[in-house]
Amino acid sequence: GLQRSAELGAQGVPLYVVDGARAIPGAVPPSDLLRAIKQAADSPRRLCQWYVERANAHDVKGLGEMLASDVDMFGGPCDLAGLLDFFASFPEVHWEVTSEYTPVLGDADTVGFAYTRTWRGPDGQRLAADAAEEITFRGGRVARIAYTRGPSEPRLA
Figure 1 (cartoon, helix red, strand yellow):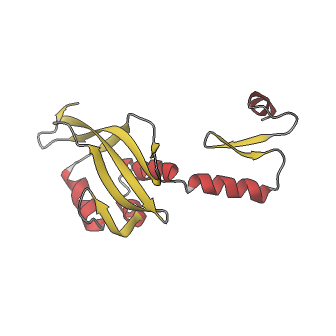
Figure 2 (tube, rainbow, N blue to C red):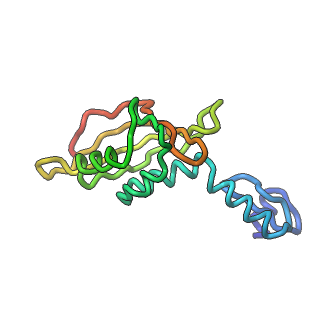
């Protein structure tokens, strides 16, 4: 609104902020606003957030649709069958993101983040491990996922 615009240094007209950055100063056609929102939604940072949200929803089909056909996931290929195996191996898996989704310096297509992953172990106890990774996007799809800090030893959650 106008109050936020004034805080950001604009006077008398709305200032549209998309994803924390000035996107459109002042009154603009709706098509310009929609274009800015779409660009923000398609940014690697937002795609990364969307990927984690799909994972937490156990939306294996949605995750599979986000993968590039030649995705490199932790050093190897991955497809829908690989995702199904992963989710079967880690019942009730959940990722709690513990950092910001941060664009990698010098690589606008890659986003890094840290998290605590929890799941139900074979004996029914809740387990947890901490890790950090980067996800690289190409054409809106996941091209690569790699650890920047491998998972810690599992512990009771």
